[in-house]
Length: 94
Image (cartoon, rainbow, N blue to C red; front, side):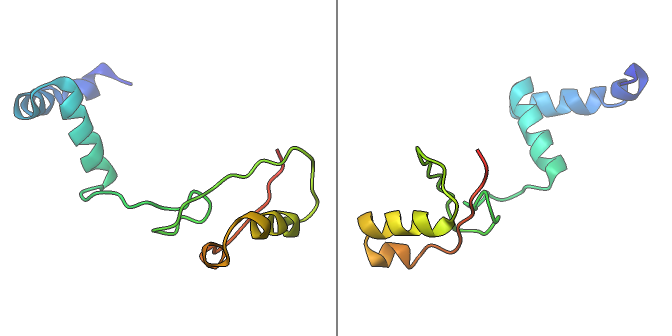
């Protein structure tokens, strides 16, 4: 990055450090502002991005061919009301 471009922001950087107390806090506020995040983030699924959902990873010790095997294992150990809340399942190679 060109130093001349960076130097344009020197006064603003100093103002942010003075306002927020230290360089780390100033940088956190600047990054949040630039990314457009102004309110608290909500929990989201890592797979679908849906708010309020959580991603779980289940690792099997043996390879399997179909998601139905995972459903069978879950049905064996989890109550039905918990299974009813599952909104999607994907297999991936690993």
